[in-house]
Length: 243
Image 1 (cartoon, rainbow, N blue to C red):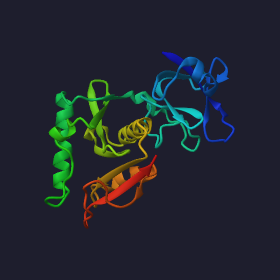
Image 2 (cartoon, helix red, strand yellow):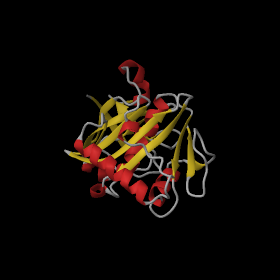
Image 3 (cartoon, rainbow, N blue to C red):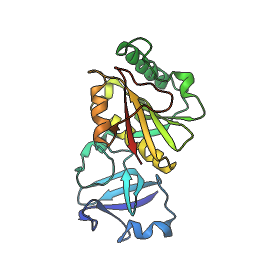
Image 4 (cartoon, one colour):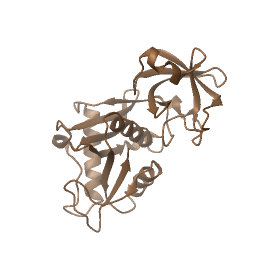
């Protein structure tokens, strides 16, 4: 795996990103020679901070940033300087595409659906069940810590250049450890790679939905109109992120 130096004493000219270097050169200057692509796996290291960690590259316009496959609790998961680095990468969080065959995945999905029904009025639950998530236009991803599932999320392709965020749920044993933020960043990056112009979501109202809404808005989602075949009600709400 390619080893990339992450220099926390160096910043890009626009003062937005920490420097990533390969053999002494800015990583952006080596991307073509190395044949690097968005979401390619690399190993980040910094001798001063004494860490070495697997990550995934994320290209933000002209800069090569990273999506930490072992990094947690950062709202955007890039090397943006307005989000200080955290030692939470030690929690060893791994994200992968899920085929829904795992008993742990199915159990977390069942917990998610039960929570949606418990906190929504009758006939207002639009969460996808197992069959819905197995549709060909839906990609499910799960986050794992060792052998234990930590969270689930999904991306639905609407076929018109837009995507929908679905089935976001953190396992109760892993709440407030950066799982949801990491899954969200992973899915947003995937939507960008696919060339979507917008990512949207439908959710409910009330205390049970407030933590997720705070995360979405912090990540840049804004309130908007109903989309796809949804209809607005006093309970549901719609958020969008332009990509």
